[in-house]
Every structure is written in C-alpha cells, then in structure tokens.
Image 1 (cartoon, helix red, strand yellow):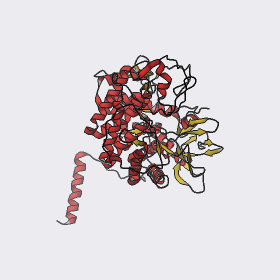
Image 2 (cartoon, helix red, strand yellow; image 1 turned 120 degrees about the vertical axis):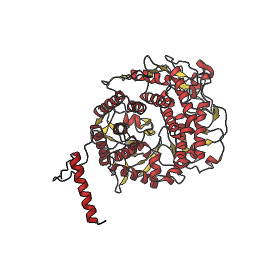
Image 3 (cartoon, helix red, strand yellow; image 1 turned 60 degrees about the vertical axis):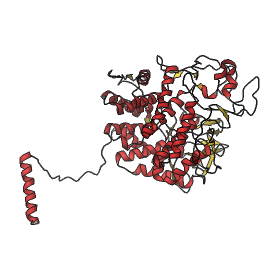
Image 4 (cartoon, one colour; image 1 turned 30 degrees about the vertical axis):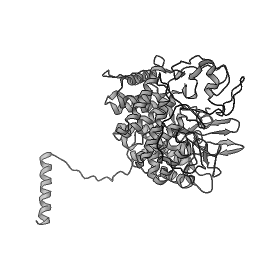
Amino acid sequence: MNPRISQAAGMAFLFLFVALFGLKFKESKEPRSTKPPKLSPRLEAVRQFAETVLEHAGDTYRATHTPLFVDGLRVADYTPVKWLHEGEAWIPSNLANQQNLFRTFVGLSRLTGNSRYEDAAKAAISYGFDHQQHPNGLMYWGGHRFFDLASGRFVGEGYRHEFKFTLPYYEFMWEVNPEACRTFMRSFWNAHMLDWESMDMNRHGAYESTLGSLWERLPVDGPAFFEGDGLTFINAGTDLIYAGYMLYQLEGEEGAYTWANHLAKKYVEARHLDTQLGVYQYSKPIRKDTPPATGPLPTTSNFGDRAENQFSADFGEVTREGYLLRNPGAIYGHNAIIQLQMAEQLGDRGKELLGWTLDGLKAWAKYGYDPVRNYARPMWADGTDLSGYEIKRDGYYGKAGTTFQPSIVPPILLWSYALAFRLSGDPELGETMRHMAKGFDLGDWGTWGVPPNVNLGTQAADPLILYALLELCKASDRPEFRQLSERIGDNILYQRFRRGLFTPSADHVYASVNAVEPLSLLALEAMLLGKEDLVPAYNGGSGYFHGPHDGKGRTTDQAVFWSAKK
C-alpha cells in the first residue's frame, strides 16, 4: 500500500473518532512547566530534612572532603555534635548509626524520582567499604568505634566491634558492593561467635580475628544456661540472627540460614518451662572471681551471674540474668519485629520462626502486661511480679533502696503486636494490641468484625505508633486506619519537625541524622500513593555509641546528645 494513502486513511479515522465521541484536542501555546510536582507537606518536610543533611552534615572538616556525614547537628546553628575525650573534640561519623538516614535517602529518591539523595547514600557506603573495612571484613563502626571527621582517625573505646539492635540496611549495602557486604556479614558472625558447638557468643568481636570455617560445621543442640565466656545478650544476638537470614535472602547461602535459625532457637529453648517467658540471654557468665559477702557487688561479669549475686537470697533458683525481665522492648519489641519480618520474607521456611515469636508475644501478654494501665510489669521469667520490690545491695541492677516499678509500655510493642496480629490473625494478640491502642489514646481499634472507633484528635506523634498503624493498613481496607495514620503523620510533622531536622520536642538541643521520623513519613506517603515497595522497610534498628566522655564518665551518645535538652 502506498504510504501516503495509508497516512491519509489513518487521519480520516482519527477525525471520524473525534466526531463520534466529541473529543477535543487543543494545542498548548504555553511552554511546558519544568517545575517538579508539588509535594505534600509531609513529603516536603522529608525533602527539607534531606537537603539540610546534605548542606550542613557533610564532611567538610579537613582539607580533603569525603562523602561521609556527621551523626548529628545542633538544631540552633547546624554545628556538628562533638564527643569530648581527654581534651579532644571528636566529630563522630558512624556509618552503623546512619542506616536509617540511608533508608530515608533511598526512599525519598525512589518516591520523588530525584536520584540526588540515593546517590549521596551510595557514595557514603561505597566510601565506607573502600576506606573503613578491616582486612578481616569487619567495619570500623558500631557501639565502640567511629570515624572522627575532625582528625581523620578511627577512635573509640577499645579495639572491638559491637552491634546491639543496629540492624543495618543490608539490601542497599549489597546493591552498592555485594562482595564487601558479603565479607562483612560472614566476618560479623565469625568474630562474635566464641564457641560454635555451645553457641557461646559475645556482643564484642575482635578485629584481629581470622575468618574460620563458618557454616561448614553442623549445629549441635546443647543445654541452656551453660557457663560461658561470652554474654549472649539478645540485642547482640538479634543482629547476628538478622545478618544470617539476610545473607541467605541475598546470596542463597544455606549455611547462613541454618545457623541463624539455630541461634534464634537457643533463645527459645532457654525460655522458662512453665510460662514460656524470656530470655534476655541463654547462658551464664563463668564465675572467675568470688564476689564479696557484704557491701556493694561488682558489676563486671567475671564475678559470674550478676542477677544471682544480687537477688538469689530473696528469689532462689530463678535468679539468672536471662530471666530478669525489666525491658520488654528488647525481647518483645526489637527482636520480635525482626523475626516477624524475616518470617514473612522467608515464607514456608519462616513458619517455625513465626511460631516461636508468636508464642513469646502471647506469653508476655499473659504474664507481663497490665492492660488496665497499659503498663509492663518488672518480673522474673517464672511470672513473679517484682513491682514494689526494693533492692537490698548495690549491684549491676541498681543501688540498695531502689524499687522496681511497672512502666508505660514502650510504643515499639504496639508495633510488634500489630505486626504479629497482621501475620497471624490471632485473637489474643489482637486483643492485646487493642488495649495498647487505647492506652496510647488512639481510640478503640476493634477486632473480629467490630468496627474501629479511632481517636482522630489524638496528639500521639511517635513514629513507631505510625508503623503499627501501617501494619493495619496493610491488613485492612478500613478508611479509619488510613485517617488515623495521616493524623499521626501530621502530628509528627507539627510536633517534631523544626529547622529542617527532626527532634522529639522543641527543647531537644541536638538532632540525629538517623531519625526514624522522616522514614516513617515516607512510608505513610508511599502507602497513601499505593507505592509501598519504593520505600525501604524500617526494622526497628537504631545504633549508638558507648564510651568515656570528659566530665560524664562512661556513657552513651543517647545521654550526651539525643536526650539533651535546653
């Protein structure tokens, strides 16, 4: 067919189509706008936060600049936080404590189409792999070491690696440099596992350690509460569990899955047989020195189990460090969230992990939760309520005269129970979540066909409460949950956003670049837009630094910076 005839026939069809359906075409004589689309106030706040970090938190403190960031800024003038040590002022740049910043950068870029922020995250992580990775694979970061932007040195307390609920953004680290990320994850396990047969593990890992055979061994079942050289704290163990499962997810490394599952099981096997409560750790420190018979008790682990030393005269056999439950946010918040998220990702291979975690949450709801006051009881894992108990001797858990008291449930538990309810539909978990929501002044969320009666006038502004609601938005199409989510998001914006930064209140002096608030607002906007997959999931990780500070003794960045008020 003649091309001109074909073209003419096509034009005739077009005009006939217009005539029949009344379509009108108008050629615009105005130039196309080059302005970016207008963002919602919440999304605009996240963009301003990212721009503030790029402009004021970058490394400009020496002649040669790097793509690194300082951990935080003074809100009033954007000057960097400074850690004082023996007369020096260190400017901390701890990549382990900036993982939520990188999640925010990536989510903002992918939600807005502006690669500027994700590129900055890639540059920082890439620089870290190139310049801050020990030859054995560990990184110079975490609870005891960071890079000082003022001097260009690695500084901190001792030459040791530590994670406690740090929970890095492994997916992005893998995307930036899979070989370096794989090496770190393997070295992390290698450095912190002291004895693979007993699973004696420690929160501290030696940078001098050489990579061993890792997964080539086969797991061996053994008794709980064996005496070991390590301290098998669940905050450190959760990071190992997470790294193992993530290495399996990213690489298909079967041994990593096997050992992560085995480690998670160790905490389950150590639970109290009668209540299924606990545990904070599954071993006991070896007693190498004898504690004094009277007077203050030493607080170091070389004197053996510190709970036994301080409380056995009053409570007998149950007095073990692993059995003292005063901080439910560790076991039933952070650990539970990671294990629930991993169980969901693992599918059929995560069913056992899911069951363990759900059983633990139900046990705490039965024994540890006061639904009338929305309180968490201090207790032993046999169910003994320690509310009102007065400590008799100075020791690891407090000074003589200190009284154990119930405490308001931390918001992370509302999130963990909401996630558990979404994954299981278990009515016991749903009822606990419902009581917690009432306790946080969020209204009655309802369950099993009871319509929710949410409180849209709430002043709640915690990002973890927002994450709890986002779980219900995934599980339900009820508009009330979306409306309450937006209310919480607006509260975060109006109560916590100032001068391009996020702080818990207007009285807080410093702002962390690792704030969860901007990431939670991104998650909310992504949910409302139906683009949840574009924003990295939050997993409850944070990061911290612990060491000596001039005039304050051995303390944390939480105490020095993030809790400081005017």
